[in-house]
Amino acid sequence: MDAVYIYDIIFLVIVGSAIALFLYKNRKRVKVESKIFLMYRTKIGLRLMNWASKKFSSLWNVLSYVSITFGYFAMASVFILFYISIRMMTTLVSVPKIPPIMPLIPYLPQIFNLPLPPFYFTYWIVIISIVAVTHEFAHGVFARYYKIKIKSTGFGFLGPFLAAFVEPDEKSMARKSKKAQLSILSAGTFSNFIFAIIFLLVLQLFFIGCYEQAGIIGYMYAFGQVNVTDIEEIGNYSYEEFLNLSDKEIENITETLPVKVNNKTHYLRPELYSFLEQAKKEKIETMALYSDTPAIRANLSGAFQKIDDKEIESIEDVYETLRSYKPGDIIEIQTSEKNYLITLDEHPENSSRGYLGIGFPQISGIAVFLSSLTSPFFSPYIYAEPKYNPEILTFIYNLFFWLILICFSVALLNMLPLGILDGGKFIYITALTLTGSKKKAEIVYQIAAFMVLLIFLVLMLVWVSKVF
Image (cartoon, rainbow, N blue to C red):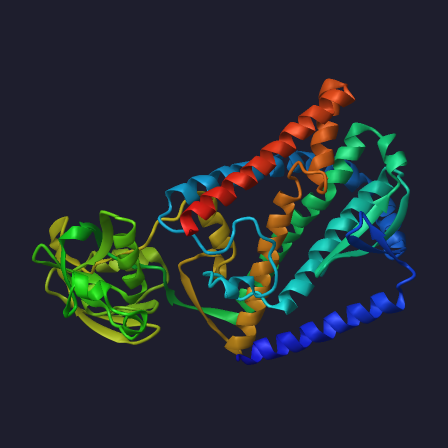
């Protein structure tokens, strides 16, 4: 077992024992709420909330409008994300084995072999503490700004799940203006979003201080679509022989294999081997195979650092340099892994130009924005080498990754119109403001909550249909 897992499990045992001991010693102050929640009430943080609400009162007045606006934006965004998720799941050939409706708990990505960084218990306890405290503190500051009494603060337990809370006087809050109530309810979500941005900036400072740019990564080999039924050979095997290999035999094949299709050569890398069997089972008619190019034949890998004497610092450097060569030219490519001498082919679109056979995928929209923010030096194509111990730096980077992702996720999901979330009361008060009728507001809230539950059901049904 990796040393990180050993230390992490030891830390889990220590923290779990400390929490159990704390609850036992304070059992008279721990109350059971709604038959399932354990609540421990304190007065911690009340003075700081009072001070902050008075010290920056003009700021909270402006941020009230921003917070409410963001609340509506977050609520709309999460419904859009649900729509995109359903569309993606219905079009994907296969989906991850993990259910789409499942809380993020320690080791979950590892258990389901997801293409994500490991999620240790250490990350979980640190992130839950940061997200919960900043979320609830924002509720408290806005409540005190609007002169609403806070009866207590504290933390709660739902089985192994931890939570923090701020308990305002509900009767006092109900007497306040609709603007005050909406700003208090949306303050936690807005706070999570603000801290996600702050941690993104801190992450970039971390990259600047601990990493250095060492090339360009993210390129792909040229590929094309072929009919599965036209595949004749894969390496030294016929198509049927390859599909009949055992999982262990497949795992032992680590090289890129040539694939004969209608007497033309294509290539198949190890990460796509399992797709062939899946394609046969699900009767997929076409699949992408790598084209026969100099890059795939040389098994080009690693980050571009030099092409001949040209230093590569951007995607544009790669394209511009390659455009200057002709078919048959031999170029030297230095990558982060090794040096290559490669003879260029004729470009399929311009016979006077040399052709290596790589390209960089064009990421668009929110994907490129988020991937750029969380990548070294604001670019998903930059390869960065650590200046110090790589294991420690990777551990810290992964912590930031999960912290930012969870801050954004909580900011959105907390605005779902469900009774246990801030979004439930938020949509109710909005409807009450617009209709002036408690009965109509309750109907609007129930319809919105039903839509969320229906979306959850659809997601689960689509997932079940793909997995089983």
